[in-house]
Image (cartoon, rainbow, N blue to C red):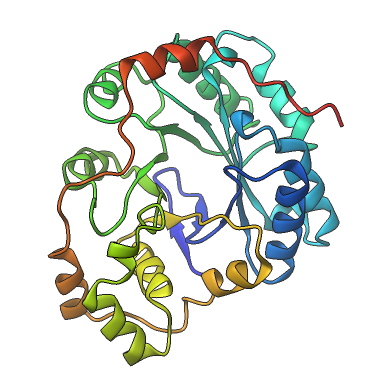
Length: 280
């Protein structure tokens, strides 16, 4: 496994198992099997309602807790809950998480970030992050943070490389974790001729080439799947390296086009919605 160094000196694996949209049963199975085959990063969230399942997957994998990088996110309804961090740790069945995000720039997100900073100081989070904070949101947070975040999690793929955002991230050494890394499964992206050619050259699939592009961009990538064969294929990207010319060719695909467009109305809904967490 390759790793990157964070702005606080800690390290993070470059590829992990994502659990967005996975049921608790599927999340538990995917986490357990991914860790057994060599993954060491697990990403979940309050809002995914599978934190307990992810915790079980980690414990049942046989991999030591200290060898697993666990990432989760506080949902906006939890930002003002003084017990939110401890309740999150309890669901995961751990004493600390390796990375704790606030999930959306909704509700009292500054209170949420203050919770992250306290968790960091208390040793309950080894790194902190912001998810979906782009444009005016990261600009405002930049004037408020006491601890610079280690990560941001946002949509990123060859059609949308977050070039503008990365200028801010580079100033602070903030790392990017990609969601929708394969363009939300867009066939147009997967069938781009450059990926077909590189897949043939390296004996990989176009999806594997794209995932490798992410890691060589310095991004951490967390593709999710309930299919064990797909999980194995997603990990099988570390035995080849794209050349500078190939990376430059892929860079020409950047259209500045995202797949997900968040609205102010959605942010209001996010602030009002409260997850019904797993009971067991």
